[in-house]
Length: 539
Image 1: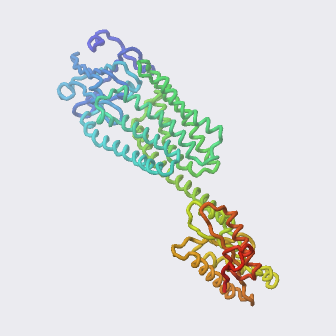
Image 2: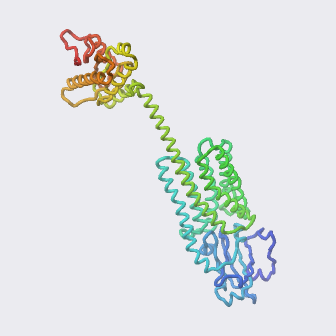
Image 3: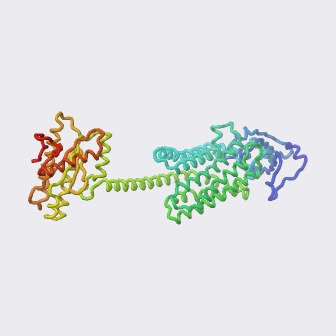
């Protein structure tokens, strides 16, 4: 129906409480034009641009003449205002003479998708909003930029740390940025051809996915054991509900209805309630991380409840609350970024504490308790490593001569001190030293590049034994007689087993004991032929 036909029919407009219960392909809105109450200059009609197609704006003069303007969907999108509204100039208001004669403004909206396309229509100064468009757009761009910064931070740290909650936080940030970018109107700067229905669906879907990601983030961000299992399941289902409802009611094939918006907004209520309860629940259980959710999400929950109430057309509300929601969303990303940093720090500290404990346990398992040098377990592992790396050429097995007599004559405290002195001195060499039991020590001797290696090894072992005798004499003055050492030496070939090498060294140590002690034996004396050298004795 055209404007002239509408005026001819004399059909009454509904001003009752049920006036938004509209139906049909075209909705007409009638607004009295009270020129004396409006600002000067051109006046425009403003309203929610979600899902709009064609709009006609008619100005009826005092003589019944009609001034008309028709705007296609693309033209409505092109006249966008920040925060998801349009601004369409009322014909004749640019002319002061005609403006004074306008009595009523009639707006025809074709196929409206949401009640707010009708309920929030207002008349405003075109010049004022033209002037506000740039600063408000800049403000929304800054908000988007502030929200993106934690995303870069997350990407950097996730590459190194691989904590799953960082992925969900990144999804939340992406959805917040996409929602702010779309609903504020900035999307028209980058994608001027985008339809208003597509923009509406982006607004709705980004919030639904963002809430689902928030639920998953909360479950993984809070410390283990701080949220009961039943509550975890309930929270997950409540967070996913808006996604399922969106998939059911926000259809792209023309099945969308005016009431779909009510179902969509109502689907967020369980999530808000469960999240609020979960934050208190985790706080009571002693969670530290939940404080960041409380600080970041409490404003969003309250702004979200207001948005749900207005989305369900329970009341029209104060438009400035939408700006509060934008700021709350951006502040939430920053607060949770700080929370993520704090959580990472706590996890790293816990990880480092665990590693330190593991190192301590490893040291305890690999260290001799009395001498603080490597023990038999560590020695065996080093020998196995040598079969791969070939760092050592000989194994020397040391035994303290008449050590039982030292314990019996001077006491076990003095005997223990002898063991500690010997251990420290062997550890000070360039070779791998270990105490393998009682008064027995092993020395894995590193390979040497000298030509006469055997002679060098004998000389070095002589010096080690001489140093041991002197050091024990100096540092354990309670013992009056010299403490000497018997040593059995075996060479280490590429694939010889530890058992065979130890058996050879032990046999030669036994020969050193039987041959008078205080000597180093390199060959099997008990098997040597007559006239064969019997090894090298220490001085």
